[in-house]
Length: 340
Image 1 (spheres, rainbow, N blue to C red):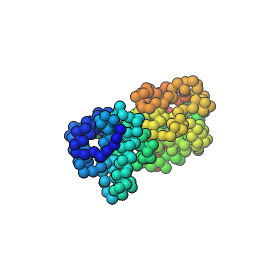
Image 2: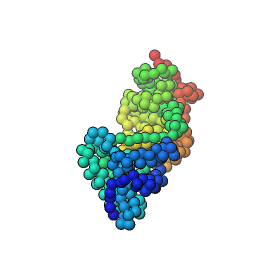
Image 3: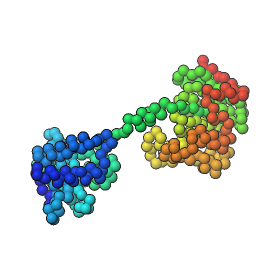
Image 4: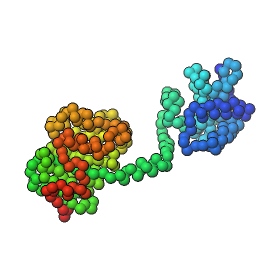
């Protein structure tokens, strides 16, 4: 095997290898035939006037190539490097890279970059072994899919807070104290009488803002010193449960832990319900909690959020979890707490 400088007469052989590479690692979806022709024109130009090497086997057949450009003083770009499948794992890629680096040094280039498809795991692993590291990530996506995802961010959320207490007047007083601190144009709160030992609280602002719902639940738990359960649906797809005691979160469940973005493994585990803690605080059957409060990579992998919330609330002995502020007035005996 030899590696030598490519000359214009090598274009057809290099282009054939380039097409094999293009077929093996499909280009981004935003590229089409016109872009491929443009790429091949650039290949021809690099062979003619920039840095280009071709690798040949013992019979003189081209089995790989490398193309690079002198981009700016001190900077170079490795535009392409490819080895045919039958010649891999024999050091061809390393030899090609060695020649490129030698050419860069002769031009006083001391920094190089390259682009690689995120899906090309084999190439990325090789480049990492050579010492290259990620600096910039280019992200791409379908306009229709992005529009649907961004539109989903405006999907409706609702939630409620449930305190382990039979003291309706004390809960009402606590709500009256804390609700005015919440920002936003609220039309008030509702406090529902005890059912199965739980008093429910609904608030207009918190119904639309899960962060505010969490804040109010924490403050009510701290003020009342009681076990407090937040239950809600976010963006019409996610079920969230948080259990507080004396203002501290003791357990949290989110049906799709990484819906809002990647998380460290420990945080993903932390968003799975802990049946032991849930049982201690609510008396729920741990086997039922384990079966119901499942997590998944995507909402489609779970039952519809309303169904999941319904069975979870039932297991906790909580009624009214499917009510948001808008329909909470239907609850018999609900007390309105207007915002001052």
